[in-house]
Length: 203
Image (tube, rainbow, N blue to C red; front, side, top):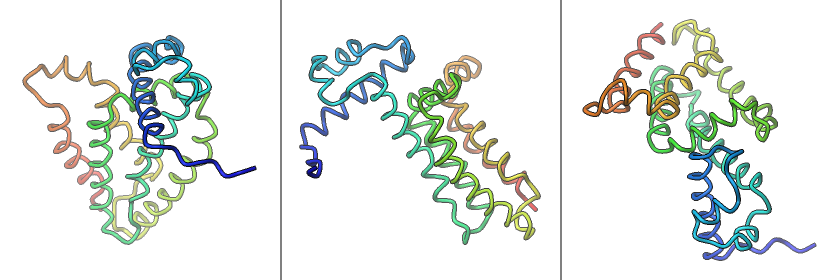
């Protein structure tokens, strides 16, 4: 069996167009409400053309979630065991908040998948995600044991960072309704969360 040919520039552009269109359709209608016809129309392509790139709605959805998982985990991968512990963790909070600002639709797509029981991501959660979180939790536990940060449960520290940062993407409408149009939630959140975690982590 021969090696798969690399995609042409047009093929790559069409894939990206389909994925961006699907993200918009899934964000508006959810996975169950979305159809291939909707995605094709949003992408400006025919349904047969779309099916040339992706065999099913599920394949598109899984591709989006896999890309998001990779993007979402990059800031945690960057946590450096040799860096200053508090500086590393504060930088992690900032990078996660930036992802909520830059990729709100993707965050909500992922949240919806989790709320539904992660039917298409269960394996990735139990393998790739768990392995990385366990690895970085061991680093955080070592910092705590050495007295370089407060004595915190490393897994729950990571969960709390996810909760505090991704909330601003997943519940954007609620936050903006409460704060009103004159305020910028993410700009305000950055300073608040930096102070919050700096105090929490101080030994």
